Structures are given as structure tokens and as C-alpha cells.
Amino acid sequence: MSTTVANTGTEVKTWGGGNEPLKASYGKMMMWFFIVSDALTFSAFLAAYGFSRFKFIDSWPIADEVFTHVPFLHGQEHPMIYVAFMTFVLIMSSVTMVLAVNAGHHLNKAKVTLYMFLTIIGGIIFVGSQAWEWATFIKGDFGAVQTKGGNILQFVDTDGNRVALRDFVVAGEGERVQHESKNGVWFVSEGTLPTYTMDEVMHGLENHDNILVRTQILDEHGHKTVLTRAESLKQLKANGTHVVEGANLHQNEYGAPLFADFFFFITGFHGFHVLSGVIINIIIFFNVVLGTYERRKNYEMVEKVGLYWHFVDLVWVFVFTFFYLV
Amino acid sequence: MAHAHKLEIFKGLVKFKSNTQKIWGVLILLTIVTAIEVVLGIYKPEPLMAHVLGMKALNWIFIILTLVKAYYITWDFMHMRDETKGLRRAVVWTAVFLILYLIFILLQEGGYVFRVYDEGFIKRDF
Image 1: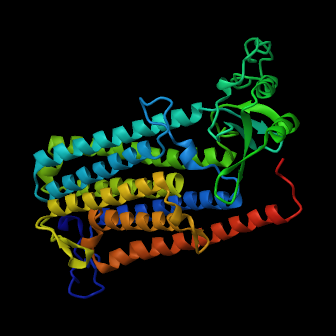
Image 2: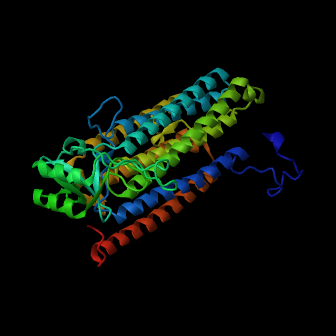
């Protein structure tokens, strides 16, 4: 370290230079600098999420009803379980990272290598889990109907359990095929058509007496309002415009479109951080294996990427709370 | 790089023999806190649904537990505990001040916009 500091010959004086009041190297200082600014970026996203949620405080989707899926357990509802697993994986990889830093202080190359490797594995598991979470969210589960005002109508049975469109709607012969630029107007294209048309949903609702419409409005107990049978039919007929399955940036079957937008944006930005963290960790891992820091007799580089990696974990702790818990 | 690590947490209530031990100790703490959050999140005990200071008591508990976790990640995993006071304050106070300011402004504004839609003459719910 000392070789990188130019001596001015005035070190005895306080303002002569060569003074390190914070006792941290340049690289570590800059990493903290970056972390503070990145923390502000993330808090801006989360605060914007809070803004939108307060704006739609009486109709915001309930996270427990959205994120209920666990891989390999089809058709079962386990809110929180999978995301708790993801949180634990990330905390665990933070632990192996700090163990790597600790081994670096003792110049123990073998241990640094092992712990860096485990950290990378943890990061990859986390990014993979997030990809799965995204895929499930985009695919959707129950399906819903959007109204003229952009609100979402969902379907429940008389006990209040969610009912999927496929359980009561029968798809007719598809007279309408998806428009593609190759078989129609070449400069116009449209997205995948929903499985059912509005008429088929209406027909399905009329034929099943036990199906009711659930709106997004939260009652005083924090549950979504369920309409009566007569109101359900009336609401669907008067205001329903089209079927929504899954989620994208324009609409989603879970409720307010902003909910999906923020989900994609915040977890996406965080996932991008994890991905770049994994890549940086891999670079540092190979440097460790090649003995770069061994020759330098200094593993501070591991400490610096460690700071970044812990920061990614720190952000996830907040995303976890504000997206899944609160 | 023979760093001197501070090896005690909870103001010296728990002391660890080595840095490695402290890391595992903090992991156990973080795991317990996360487990409490998950259990509360799944069962949502009825007494905690009462409103305190404009928000459900349960949500306050979640936020406080999150800050606890953030403290231990920063202090022990990011070694903030071993940095000088000046660096610690430069990082933490700056971030905390700016974030609180931002949250206050945006949540205030969000609540205001909600009331405009709720009590005003604009109809958007149909």
C-alpha cells in the first residue's frame, strides 16, 4: 500500500499529505462511495414503490396471494417459503464471502479459493431462483378480466377460494387467430392472444352459479371485496373488456399494473447486481487461483468485492421486506 | 494485514473467541430474525394487525427486524465495526438522512394523491 502513496517530504505536518485519517485504502473508500450512491438508487426505487402503493392503498395486490409458488410443488400454495429460501441462500453466500475475506487476512490461499467458490455457487443459485420466480410471475396462474377503467376482476368460489379461468370457462373454436406480420399487414403485429375470449368467460360465469367476481378493493380487514352473484354478472357484462393471463409491463392478472412494473424493475435491477457480482467474483476467484494476491501478499481485492457482495445481500433484505412481507 | 477485529456484539453481551466464530454467530442471528419474519408473515397473528402510528403493528415489526438485519450485515459482514468513526458516520449518516428524507416526501405525496382520488370528484374506478 505505502508504495502507492507519493511522499511529499512534509508528512510531519497535518496538512502535508500522506495522512490517512479514515485508515482505509483508496480502493475501499471508493467502494464505500459507490455503495452509498447505489444504496440511494435502490432506496429511490423502493420509495417510488411506496409512493405508488400509498396512491393505491385501498386496492394494492396482496403479495401473499401472488408469490405462492414453490418449484416441484404444483398447485399448492406456500406463500413466503420460496423467497425465504432465496433470502437464506443469499445470506449464506454472504457468510462464505466474509469467511473468504477472513482467510485472506491470514494469507490462506486454499481457504480463500474454497470460500470464493462457494460464494459464486450461492450467487448462481439465487439468480436462478429469481429467474424461476420471474417465469412463474409472467406465466400467471388464475387469469383475470380487465375492466374499462383498467381494474382487474378475479374469480372466486362461494368459499372465497380463487378459481382459475380454465376451471369454468370453455374455450370455443378459435375463429380469431393471432395476427402476425408474415400473414397480414407487415408493419403491424400483436402479442399472444389470451386462451379465452370475453364472451366465453361471460358464458362460463353464467353457467356456474358458484362462481363470484372479486374486485381489487380492500375491505376494512384487508381482504379483497367479493361481489354478490347478481353484481358479479352485471359488473363483468358492463365493464369487462378483455382477458388477462399472467403479467407484463402493461397489465397483469394480480391487480394494479404498477405492481408488476415495480416487481420487474426492482427485482430485475437487484438481479442484475447479483449477476454482475457473480461475474466480478469469478474474476477475483481466478485471480486468487492464479496466485495474484499471494504474490502481492495482500488480499484486499477480495475484501473490496466482498463489500459489494454484502451490499447486494443488504439490498435484498430490504426488497424482501417491502415486496413480500409488508 | 493483521487487522484487529472487535469480537463482541450486543454491546459486549456476547463475546466471540475468533473472527470466524463471530461470523457464524451473526449468521445464526440473521437466520433467527429471518425465520421470525417468515413465521409472522405466514401466520399473521391477529393481535398484531392493529394499527399503530398509521400502519399495522406487524409491518412495524417487519421494518424494525429488517433494520436489525441491515445493522448486523453492515457492521459485521462489511466490517463497519472495525472502521474508524469518521468513515462509519460519513457512510451511515449520509445514507440514512437522505433515505429518510426521500421516503418521507414520497410517502406523503402518495397519501395525498390517494386522498385526491378518494375524496375528489375524479372517478376512475369502474
